[in-house]
Length: 129
Image 1: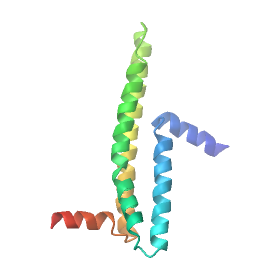
Image 2: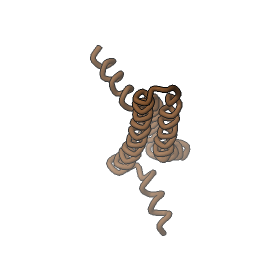
Image 3: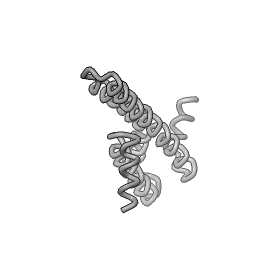
Image 4: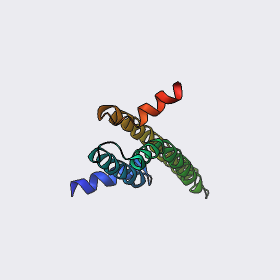
């Protein structure tokens, strides 16, 4: 029961983008598990892991725009205090989704280094040379 309460609080704080991030993170972790299980040699899984790792920031940006739209959508009416509250709440969701996208991207890079996957870090080294 407490877990549902905590998830509800997190959902209210971050907004509707949290389930999308959680689904992506789950798929990402399953892909990494399968990649390691298959001996780190599956080209499709390495491409999938790379694509998912670099998609967290665009998902955060999408959440930012959705949060801003949510705030502006609620600005109809004559009550100035209510309009400002809804605008700030939408902006709060927008910023949280951007921060979550950045955190998940950094987590992906740290995971790549710790597990020695060399999916994200090798790609950067190849681009530099």
